[in-house]
Length: 429
Ligand SMILES: [Ca+2]
Ligand SMILES: [Ca+2]
Ligand SMILES: [Ca+2]
Image 1 (cartoon, helix red, strand yellow):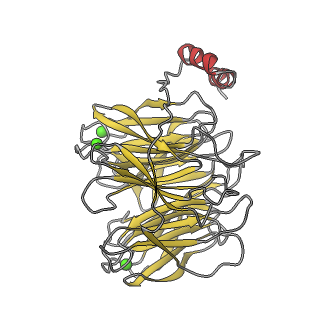
Image 2: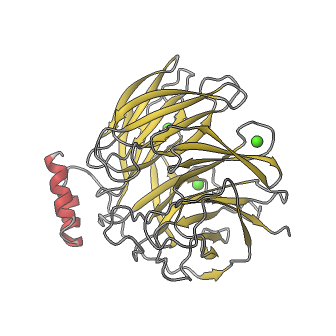
Image 3: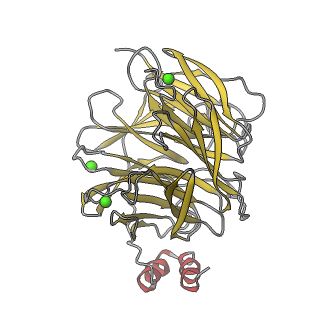
């Protein structure tokens, strides 16, 4: 570890005051944002969504790390992709008729897949899959991660291309043309453990890629790609957890040269950064950043922490952002922006992986309802199943209203109220 960074880390753990001093003294310019603990109104709203177990029955404790809604076969019906770390497989729940799903394994023998994205990488008109493989889900410093692309033959039969392996554990891969040559490149987040990194991979064609290092910190959870600063070039936003607890914006000059800007840093090294996604929360045309902190992996006593919750960063343009706390949620994971009422006002749903599961009233699925002016009310949608790490939304039943899919990951007791994949449908109005 770089000595300045090592100093930063050791000082960070001393106290808030010491941490504030150290950030000023540190060569890394981390903007310190005071985190106000928001007291949002809470509404018990458990009758709004009806749960349905979907997919294959399970015997062992489910380990679903990620779900993604996409119409994989482009037949007009949204489908569900999931990363199953008990099967070490990416599975496809095809929506065969509205609200009915059939599960199949798209690719097995994947080493701990934790994120899947669908994109037509080689421009054949068919959706290929970007699969982030950690090698091991639980802490491990070995170079066991891999970047895998599954090439779709047009009939949802896939050929595996291992683009990079023997690298620090990979947690997220996104595709976008970063150097402006017309080919889709990759942004890659690598959690690692003590050593991780963020890289971008230039697409040379014929499944050949050239790696470029962007950051060599451990703990990257997500990378997202969009034009964040309004200069019409795609940028990369990343959340780095572990002891860093930072959000980085990599501003792109359009040719794949990046400037790293830290737009958030917590002085709490146990802040528990657990995920980001992009959503235009205030509908001003600029993508904003949704951000959860609720990670409980690696803790001797995994569970709720009073600072866990949800926040959004308002994109002010020009690469500037304003922090807003949305509300508290112990164990918060997987923030997704969606207009639940279909009125265009962006609500935020998320799940809890690490709540106090001995308490039957602990929330596992919630929505922060937006009043249209970015004031949020916490709606508790469910208390069970517990231990949810993954969620997504789409048109997944005949109602046409947004439905939710969640995935359960049961690493710590209590092992009750479990489900592997759950579809949550809204009653038609
Ligand atoms: Ca489909
Ligand atoms: Ca840009
Ligand atoms: Ca916005």
